[in-house]
Image 1 (cartoon, rainbow, N blue to C red):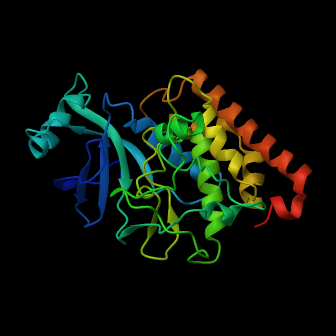
Image 2: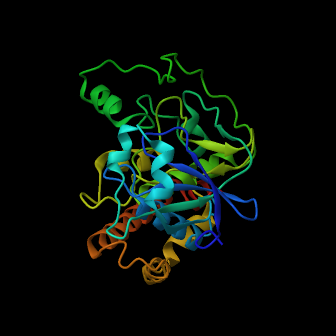
Length: 298
């Protein structure tokens, strides 16, 4: 439906560094369109590849997302005067390709976390220096160039200590999120009061949004991402079983069906396979250290 539904209204999107548009279709349903941009954190291909990978793993956390081409003349007037408009990649035929995601009608609420929330998916106590913050801040603290301080929100206020999870299974959801981000190479998730970690309504299920910085064409393994994965000690059994069974050819077929040619090259598929192997190796090491019952805990 998203690929062909007639568009009756275009509105400017809100939030985020990249350009976005809210679309309303003839049947009243809505979507969110992120055009391909020169900004490195706004890859339409990454958004779509992440959706297909989410479905192949059986997670069901990424909203339905596809690629679509829309005439730039339909979009440009909406962001007239916005300097980011110059970053939008307009194709020779005058259209803009982008990721189009199904609009979630429930409010997307930042998950209320706190200092030490990592214990929800750990056997051992939470680490004192958490990698679940902006990479620059973590690296400065880890190197000793800045003192280690408790994580803060966007207003610079120290976050409170984490209590119990707000709902049953929240630890498993967050474990899945860290695994998924590692797999798609999405470094841009944590920090700023966890505003990019959101639920469908307050207390609702976690939704995985904004994978535009994933599947980069450069380095395919990032040490900082390894630090985040290493913190996780408990995993959902079916997630790990799905990861073991994942056929990358199935992902290739799904991306080919988008109809825009090769979306991920061999280099990025090799990186995806290497990251999958790294996750499974970490799970095996945890199983050897703590046992299967504590490692595949959900």
